[in-house]
Every structure is written in C-alpha cells, then in structure tokens.
Length: 114
Ligand code: 5GP
Ligand code: ZN
Image 1 (cartoon, helix red, strand yellow):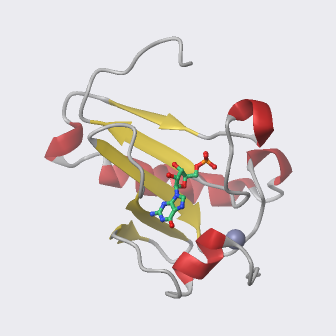
Image 2: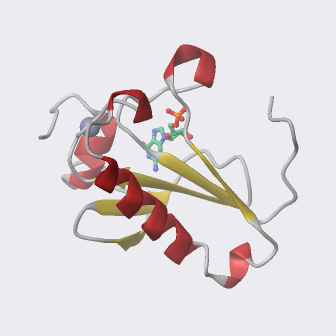
C-alpha cells in the first residue's frame, strides 16, 4: 500500500531523497531532516500500513520497527542511552500521518517530555 500524496511513502519510493541508515524487508530507518537530538532517526514501515500506532492492525509490523530501532541503537552514538517515541494525532505532536518511530540519542533526554 503506497499513498502518492504521503511524504514517507514518497521517501520509500525514492521520490524524495533521504539519508538512510538501515533497513529490513519491512522497515526503513533514515535520519530526520529536522533533528531534535544529536542522533534522530525515523523508523517507518515501507508500506503505508497505518497512519499511526492507533490504527495499526498487524502488531508484527511494530515488532520489526522496534527491532530495527534496536539495531540502529547499537551504534556508538547511542552508547549513553536512547529514547524511542511515537507521536499519535494532534495532541501527540504527530505531523506526518504514516506510522513511524523516533529514535533519539546523543544527549540526555528531558523527562517529562514537553
Ligand atoms: P511526527 O511529528 O509526525 O512525529 O514526525 C515527523 C518527522 O518527520 C518530524 O520529526 C520531521 O522533522 C520529519 N520530516 C518531515 N519532513 C521530512 C523529510 O522530508 N525528510 C525527513 N528525513 N524527515 C522529515
Ligand atoms: Zn505513507
């Protein structure tokens, strides 16, 4: 499932360039264009299976996303720790309606988040 007007579907299709970090058959990891931490990687399903975690039908997709994030986080840049976040809807701060995880690292994270 690909949505022609979806930013992340267009990144998967190569229509919009991205700085790719890693991938599985199901998932793609690439650097966020507007990083909020020294390390900021987005992990998305290659297929547009859901707008957000709230409407995901197949939990195995989430398992693959988390596993890929864990693999990326094995890099030295994440040695101090990291955070895995998914924003859902307007109140959650979501701006791109294609399921994605934010892998953040390279600095001490604040808690609670803003
Ligand atoms: P959200 O706000 O939906 O949780 O996360 C969307 C993320 O996508 C934001 O952190 C934003 O910086 C990132 N983003 C938006 N447009 C692009 C783009 O064209 N390329 C990349 N690599 N990231 C993008
Ligand atoms: Zn999409």
